[in-house]
Every structure is written in C-alpha cells, then in structure tokens.
Image (cartoon, rainbow, N blue to C red; front, side, top):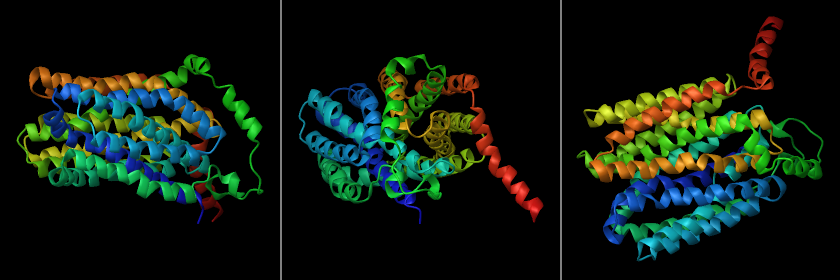
Length: 425
C-alpha cells in the first residue's frame, strides 16, 4: 500500500479531534457557558472568532515551517497546545479568562495542528489523486460532527461543560501525539517515493530550491496576486456562512422547540452528509474542472439553507440540513485542489498559510453576526437569510477565477486515456 494513505488516515484523525472539540462542540457548550459565566450569546460566541483571528495570524508562519522544516514537529507542538488549552478552559471563572484560553493555547494549537499543516501534508503526497486524498482526509471533520453532536451532548449532561473541556484536553495528548511521532513523514521523497506512489529514484528533493521558492512568496507578493484574492474571498464567504450555520443550528433547533436529541440529530445529519460531500467533491475534482464543482457546492448550500429557514417539521429540517452539509463538505477539499493546481506542492503550505489571514475577516464576521441578530430579534431567521446573499455573492465572484490551462489538461487526460485504451482494445 502506498504510504500516502497512512498520511491520509493520520490527518483524518487529526481533523476529527481538532474540529470535533472546537467547532462541532462549541454550539452545544454555548448555553451552559452563558449560564455559568454570564453574558449574552453574542459575548460568548465572540471567543471562536477571536480564536480564528489568532490562528489566521499564525497561519503564514505555520505554512513556511511546514514547507521548510518538520511537519511532524509542528503538529506535535499543536497537540500539546490544544490539550493544555482545554485544561485551562475547564478552570476559568471569568469571561475574560474564557477569551484568553481560546485566544492563546487553543487557537495556537488549532493553527499548528489544523488546516494548513494537514492539507499541505496530504498535498505533498498526492498530485493526480489529490482531490480524492484531500476529500477522504477531510471526512474526519464531518465524522467528528456526526459523533461529537451526541458525545458532547452526553458529556455535558453527565460531567458539565467543565468536565467536558477536561475530556477534550486529554484527546490530543492521548490520541494524536503517539501517532504523529511514529508515522508522520513530510514528503514521499523522504521515503524514496514520488507522489501517488509513482516510481522514482530514492532521493530527497532539493531543499535549497524549495526554500528559495518559498522565499519568493512574501506577503507583499500575495497581496498583489489577483487569483489568490478571488479564491480567498470565495472560500472565505463560504466559510463565513457555513461556520455560523454549523455553530448555531443546535441552539436554533432547540429554540424552535426541538428536543436536545432532535437538535443533535440535525447537527449529526448535517455533518454526516458533509463527510459524503468531501468524498464526492474530492472525487469529482479529479475528473472535472474544480471551479464547476465549487459552483455546485455553493448551490447546494443555498438550497439547504433555504430549506432550513422554511422547514415546517423535524423531518424536513433533517432533509435541508443534509443538503446543506453535502454542499459545504465539498468546499474544503476543493480549496486545496485549486490551490495545488495553481501553485504546486513545493510552496503549497507557504501560499496557503499566507492566504489564510486574507479569509479571516470573512470567517470571523459570520458567527458574531448571527449571535447579534439573535440577541436583537430573538431568532436566527434574519441571519440565515443574510447568509443566502453571502453565498450568492461568492458564486458571482467565482466567475472571475481563471482555471489554469494545465489544470484543464489534467482533468481531461484520464478521459482521453480511457478512450484511447478502449480504441486499442
């Protein structure tokens, strides 16, 4: 078996732990934290955008460290920070301490252990099957949503939110550190391999050339790149809508009168279909132009959100959440596929890291906006309607993204090769 699939399995588990403990559990912890520490939902909701801001600011440094040094060391440091951050969170007694726990150890842990390092690691090991590999890796994000919707709800009922935070502190230390230490390898060339398992001489790539390529990608150059801006805005707008809906769907469902179990089932179905969406859109992006796949993902999110807004019953809410999850599940692997197609794998981490802060303003506005709308109107309805407009804007901006000629040739090559083989047969 090609060792790259071991890398995919490790990043799958890493995505599960990071996103399950931070994103998918946040909405379930929201009400207990408000009741314990005081404040409004807006005030408590602001901690996660603060976390995203700090993680986004750290992303350029993480990207460069991944391209130049040891991805394993970066991820191990992230596991230690994330575990320590949740233990600190369990001990807070004031709202400002709650912010501090999220702003420092948890956010730094998320930056070192999260999307940039994981995505760059998988992108290093795959080229022809990059979309499929990224899609499978990132299924861990959605599977965590399916599982953690029930696990976190049960933990809070049994241990309280502080006990739940302590359990989350153990997860990266026990589950991730041994696997990261034993099995993470930066690049296939470190094992005498090539991406996708193709035959290659056993040698390490020219490190000096790779570092020089990364050095040319400064923040100033990235700010001048029209393509990066378009991709950052499109993906950022999608993340703004998706993260807000994911984090607020549980309290939104309970506000509508659904039980805790029914609300958890809505979040779980949304996450489950997102897992399927990652695999489906990853597979599609290896065979069709990724930009068209991204349009389809945006359209599915809009249809799903429209259904959530107008759902008359629990069953219809489940169906709408499934449609929404299927769409947003495809966005993350499609981002990695497009980035790799345009800029290659030697500087993948550097470019992704420099691009991440450009998306932070979009990502961080959605969550507090939804909290503010609820505090003002007593409902999330107007926030969800606004997000429909956000998705429409991202679809329009996507028109201006140009797919490289090499990428068109890449996705058309398997079709042409298959036709040739059939003719030869």
